[in-house]
Structure formats: structure tokens, C-alpha cells
Image (cartoon, rainbow, N blue to C red; front, side, top):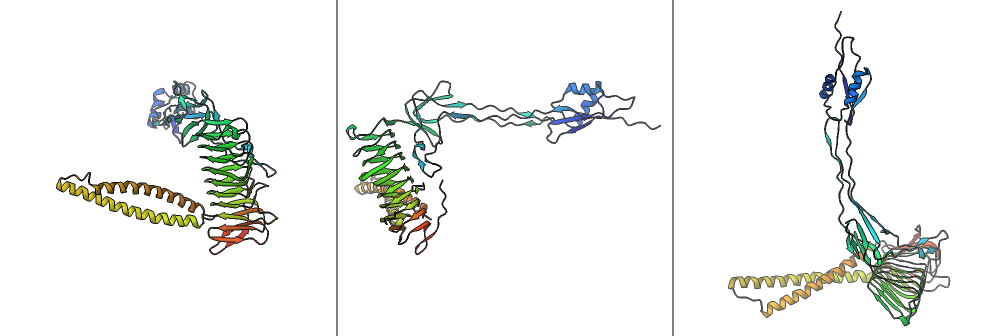
Length: 465
């Protein structure tokens, strides 16, 4: 009678090596399993971690044959969590007004200021959570992601408490995020009308008028100017945005100037200079110089009369009126920008050449000093060269900065066009760079764009946002 082969434990390891299973084939009547045999089978497969000794013993004592039993489990790595901040203010609010279902614009929806008071908690830091390494059934360490701490918040107008986790405002004002820095700036608020009898306003920060602005008032701010009511013939100058929830009745005496964007219900008989974009309902008999885009895409959007120039293009619902009032529209950088840029480029090249000559002359003085041992520090010729170098260096920096801004304008003007969503009337004059088109007939839903030798039209497919 042949001798029956001795049965051995069978071990299977999962694909990710995080689990090991064992099966005990049913032994012959004169055979049995012991713990040593089970451990030896696991060792032969490389399993040396996460072994469940109780299950091994149970397989033997309960004679669990011909079925797989989970006998070893690895420990998964637990990734750490990076430190993070909870901000108690809106860091990404939209400065654009909402377009209502009827096509009108809600200028009260513009969120211009996020205000805080001294002592208010503005941010709480949650420290990083340390990760925990794991191990598979073969004893290989599974490295966990280490939670990284964040840098402390930088900025001004707030302080960090003793727990090094809580940040509180130290002044009342407007809070905003500027390039990963939190800045709290003072806000000048007028609860009522800004009247001439109360004097002009010149403020380093934001100005908020919760009423109207009377004729003759001058308001200057390094930040944003926000007016809840109607603005009469006055002067507004802002370092950032200007938001007029009502509008402006300029009376041919008002001027508005800003380095940011402008949002207003309407402008009438006003001079406007804007380095950003303009969004409004109506521009009537205004002189506008806008380095960005002008958007009047509401149901009432209209430009009537005046001279309106937007370097990046214009979108308007209705252009001109049925009285055929002369309305001049300009888009693109224009001849002036390109001419000035060419002049500056020649001037910058000449200044650099002159500075190179000055530098050569100064180096020659240095060589003579070294060879002769005589100092020329007070030599009038050397002093004159140094003065000229200082003056030309400052002039060069100024010209290069102006040229840089002009290049940005020229680049942004490429492809600028005038999009009319609904009606355009005779009396409108469209200028794109050096080209000009005077409309003799009315049209609907057209876009004016530049071709090499003329201004052409095509259907307007602009969609209001």
C-alpha cells in the first residue's frame, strides 16, 4: 500500500501584500498540524508581521480544514493632514453685479467691503496632523504622508494670540487678502450725504458714502470708493475700484478717475478715466478713457453721445439713439499708444548707449587711479559723469516702466472690437486703431472688427454673463 504524502499548510498573500490567508488540507488519520508547522509555512512565504496567533491556534484546535482563513493583516499607513486656516471672512467675493432674470442689473449685489472690528477673530489655524507609518504582512514599512505646517499669516492690522493659533483684528476697518497676506485697512464711512458744507474727503483707505454726494465735493481715496446713492457734479479719485450703486449726474463738471474698475448704474455728462474695466447701464454724453473693457450688456445697456474709448473692446446692448445723436466709439490702443511706444523705445536705447559711455569713462578714471596712485574722487569731470549717470539711470527706469505699460496696452488691444447686442443707429462713428467707420444705416446684433484696410461687421454672438 503506497504511503500518503504529508499535507502542508498552504499560504496565499493578497496582491497588495496587506493580507495573508492559510488553508490546511485535511491531513491523513495519522497526521496532525502544530503551531511550528504553521509558522514555518508563513515564514517560507515571507510573512512575518501582523500574524494573528489566536486564529492559527483556532485552525488547529477546531480542525479548520480545506478553507482559507485570514491569518495575517498589515497595518495601512495613515497619512497626515497639512495644517490649514479657517478664515472668518470672505476672501473671494465677487465685485461684479448680478444680472437679474429680466435683464436688469442689481448694483446692490456688488460686494465691495468685508468689514471687521477690533478684537474680532479673523482666522484660526489648525495645526498639521502627523501621519503614521504602516507595515504590510511581509514587514515592509509603508511610509505615510507627513502633514506640513503652514507659515504664519503675514500682513497688517491684526495680531496673533498667545496660543499661536488665533488671529484677531487690532483695528476697525476693511479686511482683504492681498497676495497671501491679510491686510486690514481703515474705512471712512459717511452715514448720510457727503455735503459741501462738511468739506472734501482725502483718505488713505476706503471711503463709503451711505447717501448721496453733493455737487462740488471732492473725494479722494487710496482704496475703493463706494456710494450708495446718487452722485452729482463732483470729483472722485480712487486707487482701487469705484462703485456707484445709484449713478452720476455729472452736469459736464464731474470727473471720475481710478486705477481699478468702475461699476455704476449710469453716468451722464461725466469725464471718466479708468485703468480697469467699466460696467454700467448707461453712458450718456460722457468722455471716457478706459484701459480695459467697457461692458453695458444689461437690457438697458446704452451709449448715447460723447466720446467713449476702451482699449480692450466694448460690449453694449444699444449704441446711439433714433435721434441719430453723434456717438463716437474708439477701441484698440490707437495710433497714440503705438507712436509713444516707438518714441520711448528709441529713447531707452539712446539712454542705455549714453550710460555705457559714462560707465566706460568712469572705469577709465579707475584705471588711471590704479596706475598713477593719484585719486580722482573730487575731479570735476568725474563728478559731472556721476551726476549724469544718476540722472540718466532714473530717467531710464521711468521710460522703461512707461514702455512696459504701453506694451501691455498694445498687447491687450489685439482683436478689440465693438459688440452691439441689439440696435445700432446712424450717427455712430466707430474707430478701431487708425480706421474709422461712420454709420449711415441702422443695424441689429452686429460686431465691428478690424480688417487690414477697413472696419467690417459680422453677426454678434456675445453672451451676457
